[in-house]
Image 1 (tube, helix red, strand yellow):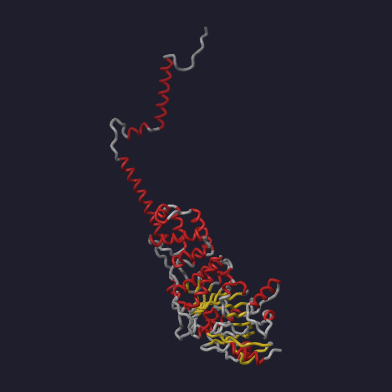
Image 2 (spheres, helix red, strand yellow; image 1 turned 60 degrees about the horizontal axis):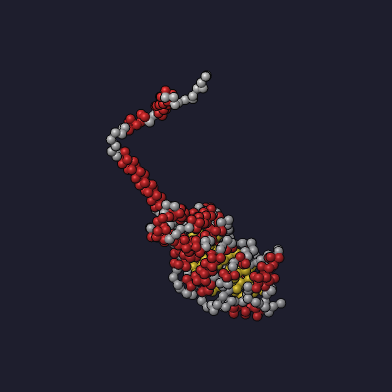
Length: 520
């Protein structure tokens, strides 16, 4: 039996912060919620990123929902990648029941049902505000990393972008990029090599195959206009609460390439757009990535390095990134090392591999005299988690077994009618949902090839006319007479008559035909 008073003091000392904090629950010791052992998260350290992990059904999404509610109330915009489709309920007020009342009593909190300001976004044809980005905005480096190209192919893509910039050929969608690849491999090859260097047909073929592979995951829906501006993710509602932008990606579970493409582009755009601000009293934006293993599932080493670099640097922009996944080992160790907040829900030990994962996970947490971490991870109840964060000095707080606060919004998905109502209130949906097909590389190159074909036809016609207008040599039979003698029937009759006359003359001279044998 642990010393309760000593444990309470350790929690109070470890989770006592200056400035504004967010309460996420209370600490548990020996199965009992300890009154006064509040687990707080300082808003100032939320740009240090974090991890929410645990097996299916242990309460990860509800923890994500509680954090999003607290951030919105504090005036911090939130972006959530909702890949399971069960997070949209944050737009509607929750309902009270006996379990919620009992939990709120244990945690000494009041349950106030509340709906939050939500913007529903989508990468496909689902209901919501459309998210798009142009190929040009990706740039040659990021596009090459997504396609998994080698250094030679990447330099070739950079050359293509330079050629398009110099030739005023906008690269907006994938059909533009495919068209330029086809053009410089054929009609435009001489022009390209004259100014930019030798073109490798094998390289263009490889790049084209990679782009088509991306197309097969319906990436055409994402590339194009109108490009989404990141400022629209960092808005406040009229009442001063942060907007919760829910990106509905339920149809991307079987398309990890497109999911990672979008996420990396969004992170890169946030990093490039937002100014350096250092450590603020509260972050400018917090991004939650649900089912984060989809980002790393098919990522190349180059792509992982890009993600790791952005994670390290983007915190100075006042942006926090939180990964939500079932297995904490899904996140590469290089990225895991950058995550300050860790909320670990229960893990299940069904196999030897599961037990190994649990052992590794427990070793990633601070040592504690109050818990046997490896055992406790498998015994956590629904809505309970092991929690540790970085304090204002960057030191990990004591590990606590925490009973999490319940969400105040709806813990279920929205109905179609409710989704329509949220979209109808959107201030940006009309702007981004309009279909735009500006003149870009595809149309310009097609026009260029059509003009070239038309010009070539005109030259042929002109040459034919010049040939017909040339003066005829004297004594030459006219074209009209030629046409008579060109008749195949007349030609055959002439040849037959000539043969008969020739044989007759030769016969008279004794030179033609077969000689008859003399009877003498």
